[in-house]
Image (tube, rainbow, N blue to C red; front, side, top):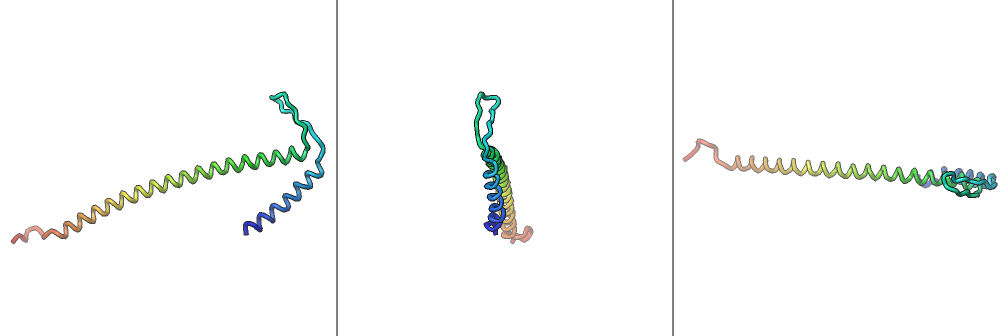
Length: 111
């Protein structure tokens, strides 16, 4: 299903990008202001390149945020595991004490 959705969205976007590139082949000059450089590029390359850089940066930021959430979930799981182990040890100690109390004869029945 995901592959079909990718084709349904990706194919029209590719057609639009190709049409944009064909229609905007004229050259423009980019002045890289703080630096003393100018670059001559095609208009479509400038626009589509900017979109590609934005997409890559967005994916990087999203990936870092997802990684942070995964690390937080792992820490929370470790904390819950430690608490559960401590509770299990406490319950085992109480169970052993209860078994030991049942094994002793009742007080006052000394023979």
